[in-house]
Length: 307
Image (cartoon, rainbow, N blue to C red; front, side, top):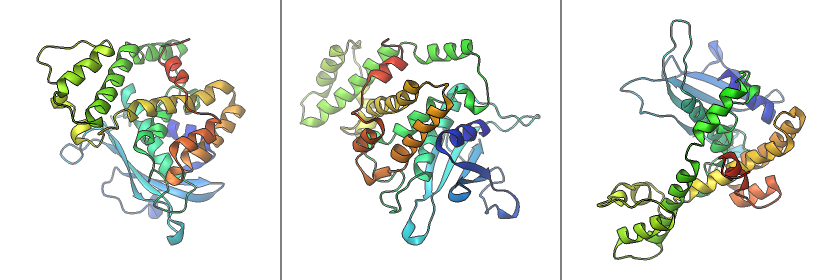
């Protein structure tokens, strides 16, 4: 957590401080921690972290939600919380996570940052509110790119970084084709009534070069597009990847090792992607930041699918 906070302070010009003692508000469990986010010494947001697994009390995985959105009319600052399922600290006080769970922590904190660093004072459009469904994962996926950055205070040898990237990109082309096929199937099934959904799915899968298994019951289990809120919207997963990778590409273009340039781009990212919430179209907000329309080039490069 300390490394994540250090990186956040560096990129977005804020200070994150834990609130303890008499100033700490009441919490629902002794493990819960409470933090204050300040800008130039003035509080702008707060957040809780409920870090450890509690069998029978918490569902699995990790998630972020808003207790309260920013509302200038009522003088209310953003209040968010993150729930994790990290193992309880060992005898030395360490709670170690697999790398994928570190990525998840950064991901969920990206959601929290969009809630807390908003500049919009109307609660209905502040933070994550009103952001289009196909862009709601941009800020979260963007933060995943920074897990291995030395600015967290943890130096990861280049050889190990290369291994992590290689593992992440293993069969990236197949994974990409699979997600595109899912998105295309979703669209074809929802554009008009079809007499044979499986035939539609088979045509799409064949187009993307995916194997079609006999007696395939894929659609029976594709709950995202029938019961998960992604009807005609599954493409948003890949579109968010494109935009988040392109946002990180802005930092790559100025040189990841160039502290001054990275901070400058970080401020621009904060004042657009993180600050404007649903007050404008997510596409227009992206164009404000990148000064152009989104491109898939950064995603393909980061996944080792282009030079």
